[in-house]
Length: 122
Image 1 (cartoon, rainbow, N blue to C red):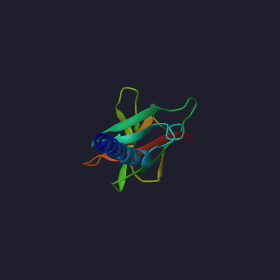
Image 2: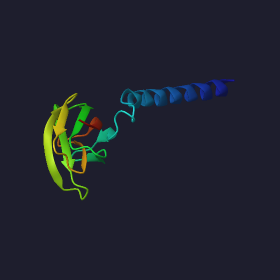
Image 3: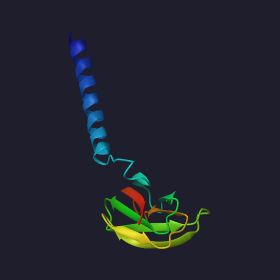
Image 4: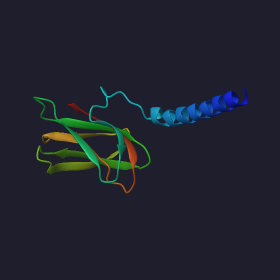
């Protein structure tokens, strides 16, 4: 009987630890239909872009993030060359006119941060 209680208590403690760990991750969960560039942790000097929508001459980048006061909204060519960038606050929007082939977000800070990033026509 004591063995069963010990096994149950160990299993319960393990399940609690896993649930708490998943709770932290779910706090940053997002709708990838809305955040269509990325929804993830960005390491220092990491960025993600998506191709702009067809027929769009102007493209906007909107983002929310944690830890830092700003990151960069970027516009790049298909080959990866930077066409332009602008510092953006969390919750802010940057408009690129004209936009290059791809737009997105770039963590130009010294540490990791969670970034929700999306682009849209304007």
